[in-house]
Figure 1 (cartoon, rainbow, N blue to C red):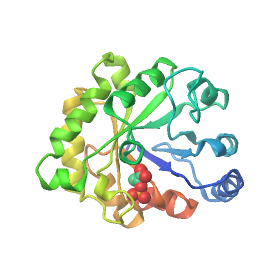
Figure 2 (figure 1 turned 30 degrees about the vertical axis):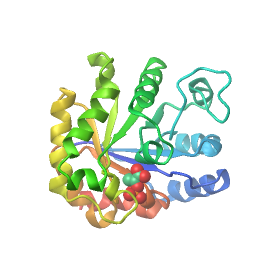
Figure 3 (figure 1 turned 180 degrees about the horizontal axis):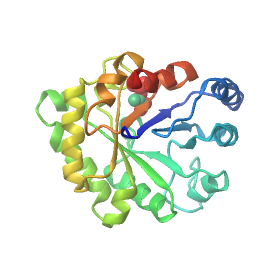
Figure 4 (figure 1 turned 90 degrees about the horizontal axis):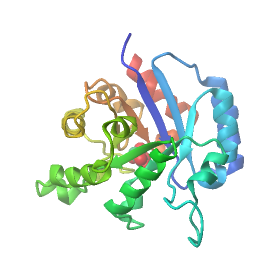
Length: 246
Ligand code: PEP
């Protein structure tokens, strides 16, 4: 059988609960499950109930885009792991570049979140990647080594194997300018070695769409895509998998 493809959609701050319901009404009409495909959708907190309902009906995985590591208390504006678990959330995106660079999340904070999510029996989707100036100054691998090592340094080999990794070069996110398949493959191959586990799941994210999906997803060390813009409509989202297969 061909390799399994992970097609995960990060809706960012888009999709109200009503829009989420509409998405799944449409998605259920066009989605054809396949043995080599795992679809996942990550919505804002306020849409998670609607997401859980739609995703369960369509048999796709679903999750949140962030969480706080403390269980409860005086953390105004934050959402805890037990709150997510109550809705049936199993997956959480952590360390997305927008969390790192717009909201100032540090490597230390991301590491605490990764640990807390794993301790709760949930799966972190850990994003990492370099900014354009870091790539241009030849610092791509130094930056990513810092981001990856800080997130996994206190984890057991078993915990490290449970994480889904997502290489997302910041300059490719939402810009329409994806990394080339060679650039993405180079980093994913390097990451697999750094993580020291040949079997971990590593996604590429950054302007993935139908027109570049085949090239990117055919690369040996890329197990799937984390998709922003193109995941907001069932047709453009699923086109990524069909383009890869055809
Ligand atoms: C993302 O938000 O993780 C992302 C990859 O966005 P886009 O596909 O729009 O570049």
